[in-house]
Image (cartoon, rainbow, N blue to C red; front, side):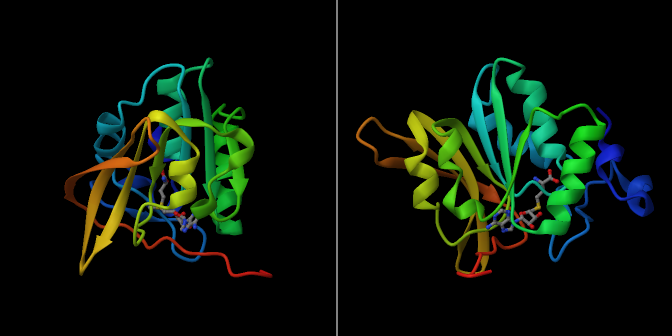
Length: 186
Ligand SMILES: C[S@@+](CC[C@H](N)C(=O)[O-])C[C@H]1O[C@@H](n2cnc3c(N)ncnc32)[C@H](O)[C@@H]1O
C-alpha cells in the first residue's frame, strides 16, 4: 500500500510532506503522515480488533488500520461527504482493501449495525466526545478525537470503564477540519 495511491494526482509529489492535502469534497483532507501513529499508538490499535473510523477522507487511515488489525479484525469507516466517500471507496478497492466497510453518513452517530468496537478514531474536530460512539465501545475500549476547547483542539484519549463512564486523557494540540452534522431530511 502506497500513500500516494490515496492522494489526488495533482498533489502526489507532496505525499510524504508533513502537511494535510486537499481531497474531493467540501472540507476533506488527507491527514499528514505522522497523524496516523499519533492516533493509533495511544489507542493501542492491534491485531484482531474491531475498529471504527469517523472521517474516511482518502481511505488511507482505514487502509493503515486494516493492515494493523489484520483479516481477523474489522475496519468500519464513515464519511459524510458523498464526493469524498466515493474517492475513498475507489482508493480502497483499487489498493485491495475491499473488505473495509465504508459507510456514507454522519459519523457522530457511529454505526450500530457493526458495534461493538474495540477502538474508535474521530479524524475531525468535535465539541465533545460523541455519546453514541462511547455507547458503541466495549468496556475497556478506547476512543480518540480532537476536541475543541476554547480556540484550541486537544487530541483526547477516552477509555470506557466497566460502569460505562469514561476516563479522559488530553494528549497534545492538533488541527483538524470540523466534524459536520447531517441535518434532518438531507
Ligand atoms: C481530516 S479528514 C480525514 C482523513 C482521513 N482519515 C484520511 O486518512 O484520509 C476529515 C474527514 O471527516 C469527514 N467528516 C466531517 N464530518 C463528518 C461526520 N459527521 N461524519 C463522517 N465524516 C465526517 C470530512 O468530510 C473529511 O473527509
